[in-house]
Picture 1 (tube, rainbow, N blue to C red):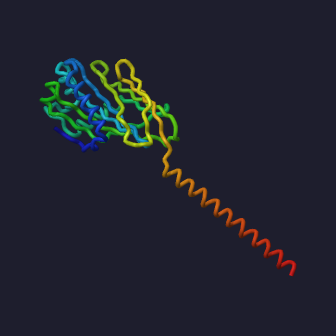
Picture 2 (picture 1 turned 45 degrees about the vertical axis):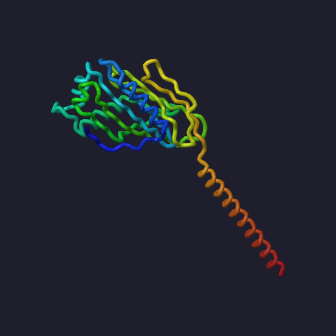
Picture 3 (picture 1 turned 180 degrees about the vertical axis):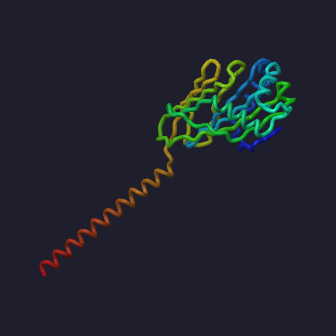
Length: 226
């Protein structure tokens, strides 16, 4: 097994449950399908994208030929990255209609023998930075158009680890190639406190300036009378 870069630790016990459910689905997929299971994790400033790809026995050699570019019977780190980049180029992600750039984080490739048995899973991890969003309701849209000729799709959103994010609803198309997530973003209390302090400090400075100006005017009047 080739690992390009290690991925982050599990986000929560609920994540583990979702992964177990996804793995159960993977083990039951059909021989002639290319199962692509996606999990999205929404944070206030970014979206993490995890895609697990498992080719059925009947299509494994076709998929392997695309990944193993030099046909040497193994998947190198470079080949894993090239294929992952190809996958990500077919994935669309946007928030409130604004397209997001999805960047590769790491790839873990299976052994070729496991892949030919329909058991090997290619794991792709990516991330997309979110623009600065105001507090309130937002909508994230994900779509996977990779290998629709043999693809079978799953898509889900993980329970957010940030208390600022609450997922309200998830809507999928029939094939689960597209997932729309409605979520609410709460204000950052730390930023609000800093802004309140800045407003208060500004008020103090303005008051000090006014008092200084009044004292200066009073002094001028006294000097002119004397």
